[in-house]
Length: 411
Image (spheres, rainbow, N blue to C red):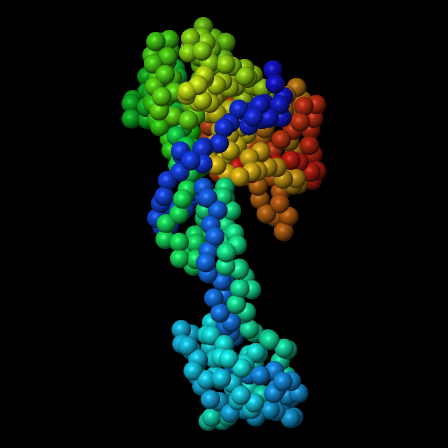
C-alpha cells in the first residue's frame, strides 16, 4: 500500500504532457476560455501604445507649473482640447496647456497632467491651483509592456484577464493544446441510470455524472461509456475501446477484492502495468493506477465505487494528472492551505483521512467546517456544497476546534 505522497509522485511521473507539435489547435479568442496556451505570445505593440493621460485635466509643461498654489496660481492659455481617440495637433509651448481627458494622447511639449479638481477654467485660460508632481498622471509608452518581449507564457490557462490581454494585443486567434479526452465508465450489475425505475438492491450510477462534471471542470472532454456489467468480456471491450479513443480512463467500482471485481485481470489481459493497487488513505484506499504499453500511452485510474471515495480520489490525484497532461506549465501537485478548524475533526489515525466540508471566511479568517452527518464514503448526500477537504495525517486522531488544519480546496 502506497502513502498518499508516494502515490501522487508516482502518478505525476507517469503523466506525459500533450505534445507541442501534434496536440495543438487554433481557436478564436472568444472560444479560448479555460484553454491552455500552447505557444508563447509576443506582441509587436507597446503597452501603452503612446504616452497618454491617466486623468481628466490639463496637459502642461511641469516647469511652467511647479510653483503653483491657490494663493499664487499659474495662468496658462488653453490651445487645444484632446479627447480619447484624437491625435493632438498642437505642440505645447511656454505658458500653454491642453484640455485632456483620460486615455487621450499626450501632446508634444507637455510632460505632466494636472487633474481638473486642482484647476479653475475661465474661457480659454486655466488657473493651476496646486503644483503637481513631475510627470504626474502620465502613462508612458511601453511602461506596461515593451513590444517584442514575451507577453504571455506557454502553459498558462487562459481566463478573462489573459483573454483581455490577447484581445488588446490584436490576437483574434490563439494556439492552444487540444482538450485531453477522459473516458469514464462505471462497473457493477447493481447500477442503473437515473431514468430507470429502481428495483430492490439497485443503485443509481451517480459516479458517471460526478466524474463527467469534474473532468469538464478540468478543461478536458468527457467520453462517457456508461455502465458496464460485471462481465469480463464486456469490461475488456469497454477498456479496449477507451484505450483507442482517450488519453485517460477512469472507472469506478470493481477495484476491490470481491468475486465480481474483474478490473485487475482485465488490465493483465491488456498488458497493462499496474503501478498502484491501494493507497494509505480514507476514503479511497482501493485505488488502481496503471499504464498501457505504447502506442497508446493511456493512463488508467480505477477508482473505488463509493461516491465520496470517487470524489476524494479524483480531487486528490486525478485532477493533478489531468492538469499536467493538458499542458499546464507547472504547479500540478495538490495545493493545501493551513486554516482554522471550526469544529472538532476526528480520525482513527490508521490512514491519512480526508474530511469533506466547507472552507468559510468568518470575521476575516478562513475556517474549515466539516459536513454534518456521517462522513461515510457511501454518504453522497452531505457532499453537496463541499468546497474543501480537511486532512488528518496518519497517527493524528483529533484536531480540536480552533486548531490549525491542512485543507485542500476543491472548487
